Image (cartoon, rainbow, N blue to C red):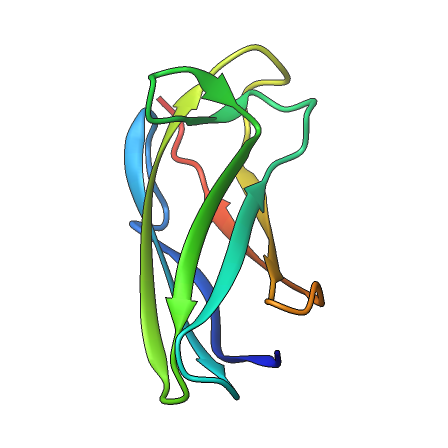
Length: 118
């Protein structure tokens, strides 16, 4: 029903080189025990940084389903990033996140990941 972001989205390692698996950290809480939520990560379609999905394909959107309790819950999501078609070089990239709770309410968050030059 109501998801609270207790600590905002961060990414590690930061800065990073690519390709690399990135750990996205956040702390969430629900007003319901065991609430199922959908978390979507997105990037700008024009730049040269891409997520790598579980099939090894480059994509600009990754989605995960999680359960959140009534206590503060640390969430760790690991997603591989890679270089791909688009604007390059990049000094940093913004990762946008949309959390959708069981009522359909959307909660935005984001973080910036610095990219090391080759």
